[in-house]
Image: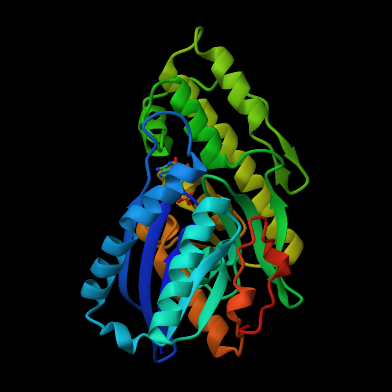
Length: 328
Ligand code: AMP
Ligand code: MG
């Protein structure tokens, strides 16, 4: 079975084409185009316009790369939520149009679960705790009693959003995470910041405000270093607590912030100390990507899940534990 998956929850429009061979995920294509606002944060309608503009190109390139005849696609999947309304509706409309014109079934995929499933497919982990750290989302997710459940999450903004907002204030381009990572490497002094962990939840807006207050007093490299150390240690703490609570012995990373080498190092150390295994897929599949939507759609379809066109309405606040899991 070959599935074409469309990702479009936020800044990235991406199409992945995957097939299942010998029970394994074979990615035939994964083509992405990211919207980068000239100034300020993501404007949902502008991001959606970007996706409309680039969809045909991304589709053409993904078909070419996969070397699949478009008529040989068996299934169309798309990111149904959670995400920004205008972006979700653009991806959903494109998916419906494609499914109708190809006369193929369509399935809507939960974006957060797709991050976990692509990690399971591309690494050797089986039943991990996922630390999902992206622009808009920060969650600790694991499979328990028939569902993917959120054990911890941010109480305010996503970790990526925190980094991007700080970056914007100091004049870094969007997305700022990679630039902050570079600056943090040169930092030497740890400046104490509000460490905000409540059970398995975290909060970042207080840290962001504190960092902005430091701008006149401290070196930017030291602030970036302290920002990363504080946020990443908080994430390690809640991920570890979720592992202890669920008695799982694998930790998997997902989301764009997981590209950060220092975060990877901290989480790997935590895993080693508790004799657990650490897994991290390649960067291309950490950030938002069509392949994860295609793969999860394929798993859903194979497990018997079907959606009528009327059921493909987008769900901006789609919760991870609302999803019916038939494939595990
Ligand atoms: P996503 O929403 O999962 O596509 O991830 C996008 C987020 O990842 C943005 O907030 C970026 O700033 C962040 N990001 C990407 N690379 C890095 C990095 N090396 N370090 C920290 N954050 C990063
Ligand atoms: Mg994401």
